[in-house]
Figure 1 (cartoon, rainbow, N blue to C red):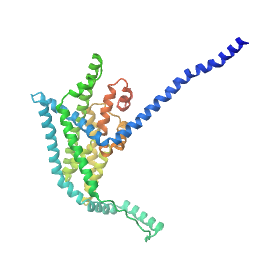
Figure 2: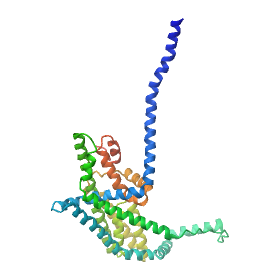
Figure 3: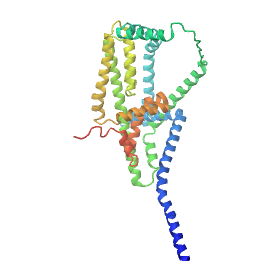
Figure 4: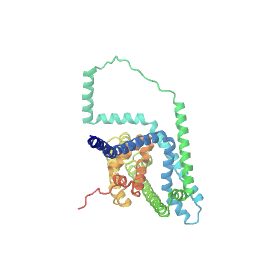
Length: 377
């Protein structure tokens, strides 16, 4: 009986002994995605919470990558890195301030006349026959639904005084701009010091050399992309200025500058600019011919820029695919607001390049990149 009891006990305990070995891989497969999701949520919350700190740092890093080729070019002629960085950074600041001073007068005038301009555009749109018929039908439905007299009381909430919020916003913006300017200067003046220091964090000679090479390639590709994209935006703004000046649109230089700046925001920038150009031309001219020429010419310039200039200059394979661009605009705009929308594409391009040089995150780089957009014949 003792032997039989021992055999029965072994038969009962043996499946239980094997059960943890079967459940362990299953639990580990669930634990790793759960931890990754928790870390992702905490990371996104941290990005939103520390936006006032992280946004100036990210902008300074992107400006450093943009201006670094100019610093290296000046260093080839014997100029010290701190001197070259100071000349380029503060020269760029003076250039931007000069452009703002030149554009401030037409921009202020247009903003002052914006309500009257919108009334003019509304009156001209009502004069168009299809739109006037739609407006008449909508008015008739409104009368049938609620009548012309409305006795409902309206409650108007008076916002708080704007002085405190405007003062805080002004101080916040000025502090952020100064942080970006001086951080960009110090990053450019230090040269490749930070790249070498990051490489020394990795032990081992071969891994350190490989990391140095990867960081140099990332810096080189990002500098090339940002510099070429900035030159394309400047050329696009100048072409828009010339087109609108030929048509006779008022303040053509202002809308050329708007087109150049909005070129950094794919899709949304062009859509916003063409709407502004349509409003300005409708208010400035009696007929709709100039509006059609201005909007159609701008869309033609944008088509040439997107399908001819960018593929030829940046290469046949652009850094990001269309889905990645749209998702980056949505994500970074949700995390960091309008500033996130502006820097979304350069920041995502930097992430894609870094991931493509990492063996562990190469899959994410392939997903964000534009490889395989066309099937091989």
